[in-house]
Length: 358
Image 1 (cartoon, rainbow, N blue to C red):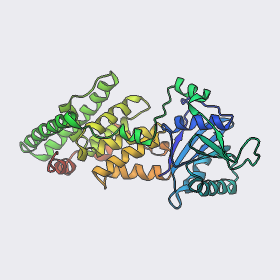
Image 2 (image 1 turned 90 degrees about the vertical axis):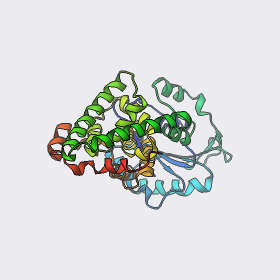
Image 3 (image 1 turned 180 degrees about the horizontal axis):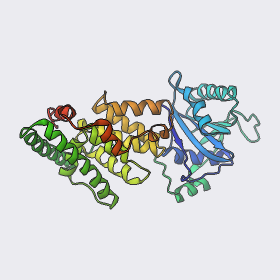
Image 4 (image 1 turned 135 degrees about the horizontal axis):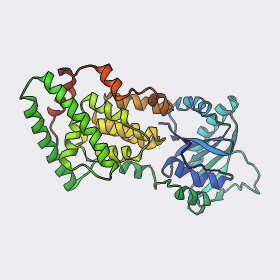
């Protein structure tokens, strides 16, 4: 899957002037040290504007969205870096180089890196690009120090990023499962006590209030206890409540903290809404690697979950997050568009309640 990170005006600006600078910057641009990957960095003048990454070997047609992306970001120059053995990297690097040059986009450098050495596909002079490669140490680079000072992070590998959203285990998992059972029992009692039309309005109103108060709680440095987290997990099964949370996502780190916490804590088959909200937050921040991992968790819980499917397609096609963000309705517009809650709104919640929590 292709992933892209665009640098906003608020992002740290990195000026890269050599191959070693580029190799030192890539892990911070992606958020992890890549393996068996092709990375394309787009520059506006000498500043990094956008970085993209694909797994190698690439899927057929996977690079189709690259040129439109670079055009949208007004990129004037690119650098390619392939990670892995020569036969794996060379074909993909050649394909992308041809694609960019056919479209009149400059390829300033094309590198292959493997086992602490790099080679240039564009330089044939042994004096500067020896056949056995040039050693490099990305950790010792001033660019790495600059990135760290600006708060950028480079995890050891993509697996480390995946571990940041894996479900809790052991006693924490057991405690959360018990909390989920208690929340489910309370909701079943509520649903059996009256007319579903009235209960739908009640549960929607309570869920929206809970979403807003939870964002305030995490903004102040707090955290939901297990019972509160389990109840919010059920609230998010209601599309109107989930969409309230979606419209409230902004550039603050609190949304990432909140939805990452819920993605790890909720019972795995309850996690699709929270994981999708984490993906939306990460995508908005330009962190498509985390967004893709969160979407994998969402779709593992519910392969047909529409929000996760929508975001997966957007990232696959390298669409900018502004395309969706700028068309998101306000909470007030959501209320007007969706109208008065009715019993059909409870169907996803009823389905969740009918599934064992363990």
